[in-house]
Length: 140
Image (tube, rainbow, N blue to C red; front, side):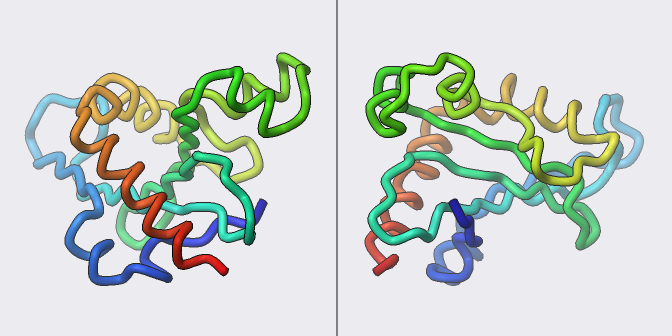
């Protein structure tokens, strides 16, 4: 499955609605000071309905993590994949680091932040799902 930046098809919405986490200098945090943009990427394969997002976490114009999130149930992914292999399905459900992408030393910290803070922000997650639908409507 090829993934493309949400920005590539919806630049105005992406500019206004991409989540940026600012960690100010001098604050006590596991994550170093900086501005971390969680740039959404969705599958741009026509006909696909994987209901997943990849977040390229960008710091100083460099990807420091690629986080995956599949928001549907294991049953959905089993049907979608036409597979009942638990390992295949486990890779699609929930959050994780994309093993096929380079990851920096910050990646595990950013994954933890995503799970404990961003994933708990229900309006944000609903916004990501809305972005997915917008993006998929434009993929022909």
